[in-house]
Length: 286
Image (cartoon, rainbow, N blue to C red; front, side):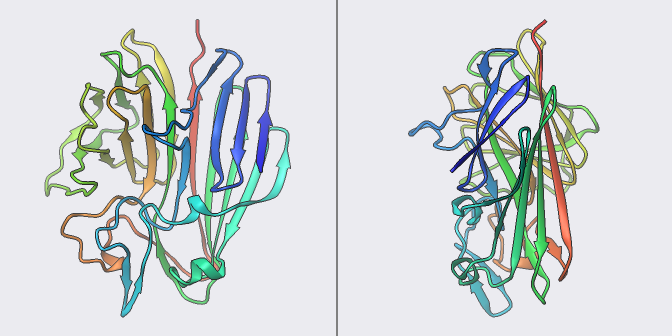
């Protein structure tokens, strides 16, 4: 099932499987803004990550004496969502715990994903609900890839709202954070900057991130909400740039496996919900 949203500026497609955004056709620029899945490079476009982010070096997490055998990036990207409410330029989807998810993540959870369009932006809202009688831990993220000519030298990513902590480079999809992290406002997209994997940045709540072309033009702006982390990733030689707002990170190489000790995990009490927003603004050619 594919849902389509439209307004005078954008034509957007969302797949029921994983609530994955698969198309952002920009009528004003007459181009596709979103990476189109390509086997051998990256076979996705904009995945939802829940209830974990990144690699799990123990192939799961321990909650007390119980081991939860989870896949990397969690399971919601492989789960169908249903439509809760829809308008021409607005869509709310929902997924929740099933017998299959309860066998590996033993809590009653619910996740709503809302997409909306404005004249300049694509807006994503992710909301997690605890429908259980017990609190649970989780991480959440969004992993969109954008179609940008980053194989051309001179692109850079700028952190406008406040300096970000980092860059932190992954190794074998694990992430170690130094005790006194550096700060940066600008990260050049060098040819091999993702050769070892994703590059993480902290202090990214309420952050405004600009991607600037070699000509100095702002190609896109991404604004985060409560997500404390952001990751950049791409594939050398491909015009793909992933900008990932995250409430959690991939594992530390020394991680014990205890869920409460996993970096970035969020705790949600029974009956509570938590909201994360991301806004993407695409520049207009002058």
